[in-house]
Amino acid sequence: MSPLVKICGLSTPETVDAAIKLGATHIGLVHYEPSPRHVDVKTAANLRKRAGPHVKVALLLVNASQQLTGEALAAVRPDIIQFHGNETPEWLAAVKRLVPAEIWKAVGLKDAGTLTRMQQYFGIADRILFDAPAAALPGGTGTRFDWSLLKDHRHTMEWGVAGGLTPANVAEAIAATGAPLVDVSSGVESAPGVKDVDKIAAFLKAARS
Image 1: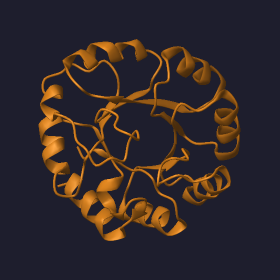
Image 2: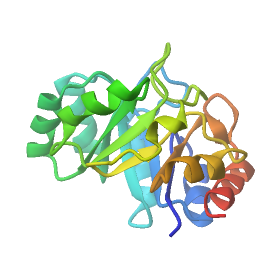
Image 3: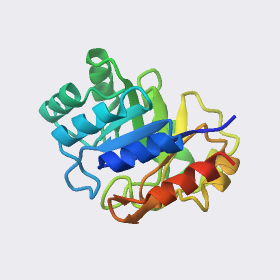
């Protein structure tokens, strides 16, 4: 069975259209100003409308305030809220009670202990997204983690793999981890924040090979 594929950090109508046409199952919109992939609320809302029902749309937030979170969710109305900072289980649970969207939590997979600590999100997060440990900016760093940490791990939640994935290594990542979902951002760019349609096509082809 082919894995689900999320193309994250899209910021233009053209790349949203391309990701959908090429067969992505999910797309991600980043609302976090320090990121080169940041889109403002109005742009995110327009891109979400453009995507329509063809893919699931995730809105990525990083340690956002209550006000910013509320405003962004009300305007964009995403299918998924992807929390990519130091958000607590309590905060995720509070949002989950109020918003009819999936809750995803990105977790920097540093060592086997992380797999134990992430259980705090059990019953709260609808999916855990394993990423490289946070650097200066969370996500989109092009850094991969040690995939062997997930070998033979018994998952208790839906999950996926992100961090340093490219058209050249995504098939290897899927084979090594058994990931049911893969998430790419910088690995399909020609420059930070600039998505490359040919790389998106190559990534999707490799993920499904």
